[in-house]
Image 1 (tube, rainbow, N blue to C red):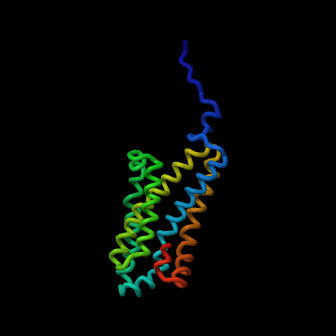
Image 2 (cartoon, one colour):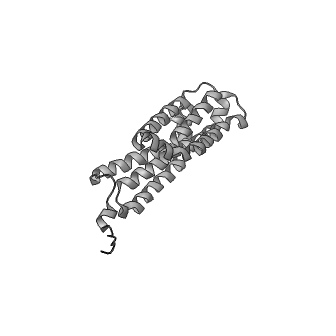
Image 3 (cartoon, rainbow, N blue to C red):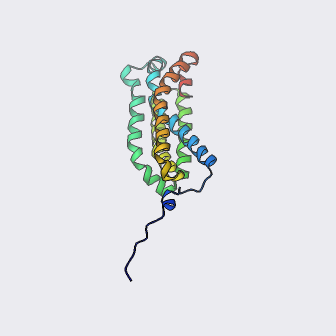
Length: 185
């Protein structure tokens, strides 16, 4: 008897990992897009707030720029750890805890009373938000069938480009109207 390999049917290749209804898939997409858009907008928010932060803390331009630098460094350090975190603690738990820590650190950025405190919370914010993007992609690829991956990743990519575009502008307008603390809100 010859060893015959049976090719998987086209439906089994195109099945999503999670058996969800179309409405449930859209909800997953919207939640994931919201989390990553908030994160991607937060990376550049402090660029719009730098002059206000400089005045509020009596800091030099070099000192206040650390709020951006350390956030980006924390992101760069933690992003490669996303796979390990998801494997160790589970994708859902990692996503939920990172989103919670990101939201809490964003609140504490606005509540900071010193430049050192703000820099600390920006580090936490970058580290907590870093896994959101790769985990979101993995969740979406598992949620949608392979035939819809290109479409879903295109939508996901567009929302990740909207965040850095709108975030600093919105934060600048809000900080002009209500103060720099609200720029992080």
